[in-house]
Image 1 (cartoon, rainbow, N blue to C red):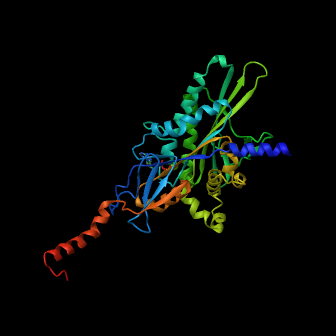
Image 2: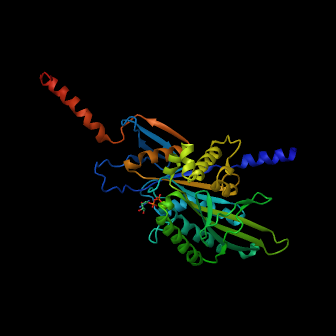
Image 3: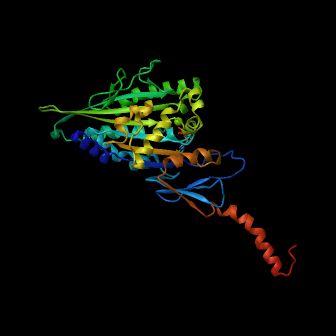
Length: 373
Ligand code: ADP
Ligand code: MG
């Protein structure tokens, strides 16, 4: 009993926060007929502000671990938010990277990117191979890397490497490792090997999504890279490190369904996983967690051993600057932020200059001896 308590305490102390980065994508709404411009802007490498819809002369200022402005390159996002956690998965520790935010805000751009601007996934996989290659032979470990790729849609876990309609179960072994019996695990020995399996599987998902009505914005795409290292000499110890790279469902669904129990049920619990993820991150980061609700959804159950605890986790919250995203942005920021502050100053000087002008003219009129009435 005493021993169990000691272990539990040690575990609590080690429970790590989820680092929160926010990435603002460039302004893209060319056909913005009102010409409103952006409603959110960066201040420095940790702070941003968004106009306060209740009072346009105020802004709401938010603080994060990292803020990536619209000029930030794919390389910079990778270097600052992802690369530092990768060495841990070669020593049997777990890690997870999530892209959170409303549909259209840049999650897939951040995680996948394009061939000209590769995102977190290709860069991280390449880096894992680089790290393994750089390992000294004399350290005496052999490394094996494999990949799995799955999707959670409607609280069903689906294998993207060998697609079938089957919902895979999530299990926990006696050491509290989470695993999915029956999930395809493909050994990969190089980046091109990875690409060969990953690209057609991603296409599977995209084709399915157009058929199934915006499925990609409602499902979580989860890439798992597993590094198993085995000691060459006796006792041949083995360590397994897992890296989860997750392109989450659009957070706009989260609110629509999350607020109303009936709708949540009607929509087949599409975003129960996203809603629960918010609660899990909240309870990990508030530091007062008595119970982290991992078991309440498939996504958080799957990630239980790779989110919080001794794992290294980063959430990249993607936001868009256009006004039409205002409420989605606002709630994504409220979820991501540790603190916010209402600042009493105009967002753009132009908007304030307009009402000020008539006052000034009136005063000039008075000085000039005009009646002003
Ligand atoms: P999401 O996956 O969150 O729905 P996407 O990644 O598809 O959003 O991004 C929406 C659009 O914005 C895409 O055309 C994408 O190429 C573009 N985009 C997103 N982020 C950036 C960025 N940082 N720089 C340039 N274009 C971006
Ligand atoms: Mg997307």
